[in-house]
Structure formats: structure tokens, C-alpha cells
Amino acid sequence: PSIHDLEDRGNVVIHGEVAKPDSYPYADNMTLEDLIIQAGGLREAASVVRVDVSRRIKNPRSTVDNDTIGQIYTFSLKEGFIVDGTPGFVLQPYDEVYVRRSPGYQAQQNVVVEGEILFGGSYAMTSREERLSDLINKAGGATNYAYLRGAKLTRVANASEKKRMGDVIRLMSRQLGEAMMDSLGVRVEDTFSVGIDLEKALANPGSTADIVLREGDVISIPKNNNTVTINGAVMVPNTVSYMEGKNIDYYLDQAGGYSENAKKSKKFIVYMNGQVTKVKGSGKKQIEPGCEIIVPSKAKKKTNIGNILGYATTFSTLGMMVASIANLIKK
Image 1 (cartoon, rainbow, N blue to C red):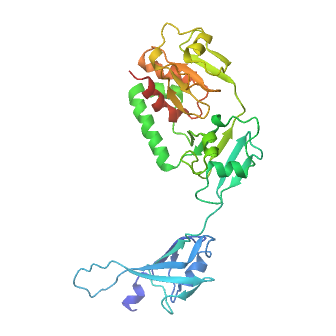
Image 2 (spheres, one colour; image 1 turned 120 degrees about the vertical axis):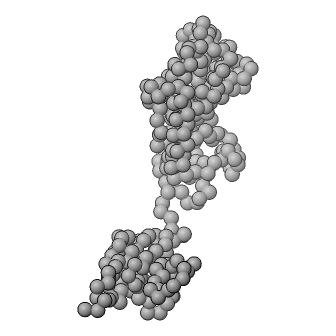
Image 3 (tube, rainbow, N blue to C red; image 1 turned 90 degrees about the horizontal axis):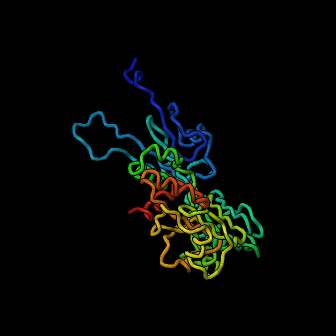
């Protein structure tokens, strides 16, 4: 037998937008079309204007190194057949084929609006630049009972956001101890809250307040909430009616005032939309319907944040708020 009869027949590999991307046994006179058919055909997202074939450099008589490490052939297809490229192109063993994803292909991307909205539910995005105001207009606008300033946005975390969340939690674990973090149930979440001002977004479409939406976003619009909750190191934690123009001391009085272990200078406010702010001065302009005033205690550092997080009933994503609250109350 010839030495060539003993050679490895090799495989060919196809990547990308075909039904079954994989490695396939090479056959004599195998064409690009043959391989695509063997791989189950093109997917819906496949580009027919750019299919690349990568070929090894094989020169058994070479005596020097070569800077070239491969050859690339590019084709366009029509109904699975080559219409532009090297005529009569035949694959060779170890060729690799890359079927690219069309840059113009987009699967539907959905967002949800719920609560006090005329036509709540799931909506397909029609633009990469779709904003809060666009979605609310699609859904017919908010009802007469909506509290726009309390609206919140819940977003699905992508890989980089989950990594950052994990970094924050690891940092807090070093400060609080893993046992404390475990007892709080703080972990990397699949979703997180984005602080929004829907009232401002609707009043100024296209502004920085009118943020661009992302697939999987959920906008929740609550009913008017004419109460304020006072929690933490107070005599009697309480929920009372919101009184326009009243300062922080008025609401603290409604909870019996500070308890003896209150850290008075570190009190903060959690709003219905998930935003957190430290109380400044009298706090008169900071207090809004539906907010929660929280007074930290002078408990030991290891339990301090745990107690505070337990008070905050409006928190929707605990793991994302640990760092900001710790920063507000640290000495």
C-alpha cells in the first residue's frame, strides 16, 4: 500500500450558526455545502454574506519557519450554496468553517410593566434606545392612583454585574465575617434594583432620568402610599400618615423618639424606588410618601448592619444594598 493510504483521514469542524456545530469525518471531494447540510443546515440567525473557512498551512518540504499560520477563504451563500468565492472549492482535512451570526438578526426582547398602569403586561422592545417613557406610553399611561415617584425597576444581572456583586459581598464578608453574611442570607442575586425617577422621566422624555431599558426589565408602579415608616433604634417602630412639610423630628416623635442606643447622626431614608440617602439637616425636603426612616443603633459592629438590614422592609435586593448602607453608617 502507498504511504498516503496510511495517512489520517482527519475531520472537518463547523462553528457558529448551524443546527449542529461539531466535528465531522472528512470525505473525499467534500464541499462547503455538504458540510452545512451534514450539520443540519443554517440557523435562522446565520449570515449568508460571510462564511469563512480556515485552512492549515501544510508544507512537508519546508526548511524554514513561516509567519503565516493559516489561510482564510470567505464565501457568501444563497439557499446554502456558494454564490461568491473560490469556484469549485473543496474542503480539506482539518478545515474549520465559521458561519457568522447576522448583525441584523434580533430575537424579540421583552420588558414588563406592572401595577398602576392602564395596560400592564409584557411588551416587545422595538429599538435598542427604548426608554422608560416609551414603555409607559405603549402601556397607555399610569392610572390616576399611581405613585410615580415610588416606581421601581428590577433588572436581570448580567455576568459582569454578578461579578461586581460578588466582589462587594466578599468585601463585606471580610468586614462583618462570613457567619454574619450567611445569617443575613446575603448572596449574589439574579436581579437587582435600579433607582429611577419615573415622574421626571415622563416629564422629560429622552433625558438622563429617562433611562434606556434592557431585556428582562420589570417596572413596578405602586399605588399612592400616604404613609411614612419609622424603624430601628426608636422607642416604638411605627407607620404614620405622611404630613407634607413636616421634618424628621416630627416623624421620630411619632415613634416615641430615639432609644438610648440610637446612633442619631447616622439615620437614613429608604425610598419606595429602592434609593437610599442619609438624612441631612431637618430632612424636611427628603421625606416623601412611602419612605422609611431608619435609625441605626450603637450595637457592636458585627451585629449593627444586620439589625439595620432587618429594619428595612422596603429593600428588594438585599445583596446590592449592603455596601451602600454600610457606607452611610460607618464611623
